[in-house]
Each structure stands twice: as C-alpha cells, then as structure tokens.
Image 1 (tube, helix red, strand yellow):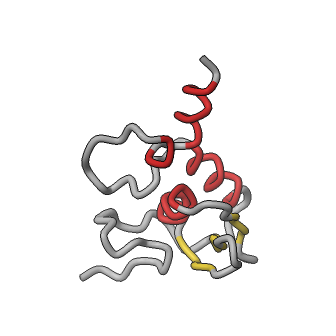
Image 2 (cartoon, rainbow, N blue to C red):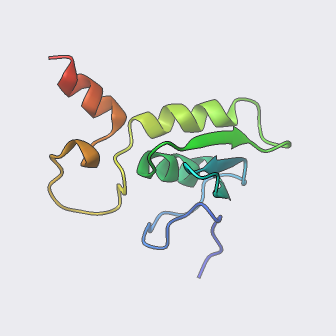
Length: 99
C-alpha cells in the first residue's frame, strides 16, 4: 500500500497530491500534517478547525487548503444522499441560506 500523509482518512481512497505542507488543528488543537489535498478534505470534515502552513510549505498553501475546504462536503468519500446541512459544504450551506 502506498504511504499517505497523516491527514488522509483511512477510508478516503485518494492518493496524496504534493508534499506535506500544512497542519490541520481541530477544536481542541489536536492536529495532523498533510498534503494540500487531504488537508482540505480533513478541514471540511471537522467543526471549528483551522489550518496552518508548515515552515517549508509552498507560498499560499494554507489559504489554498482553506479555500478548497469551503467547497468540499464533509467525509466526501462517503456515498449516499446528502441533504442535511451537516452533510453539505460550507459553500452549499451559504447558497441555501441566501435564498
């Protein structure tokens, strides 16, 4: 099995994209380092989380992760109908609430 970054969820089948560049911290400051791809997916799946660039990260890595997470549904690798606000991305919830 291919080695993946610590931010990759065990059930997420996607490979890493790029080097480990950021740390995602949850609401109690437990964290995981990850590539931008898995960090965005993790950030989208956590409530009250934050993202910080690692010292050697490419310029803008944390903001790219933050922006990407906005449009990703929590636990996006899980199939099935998704209609509850907790199952939608932040962007989808904003769109629903602006009607």
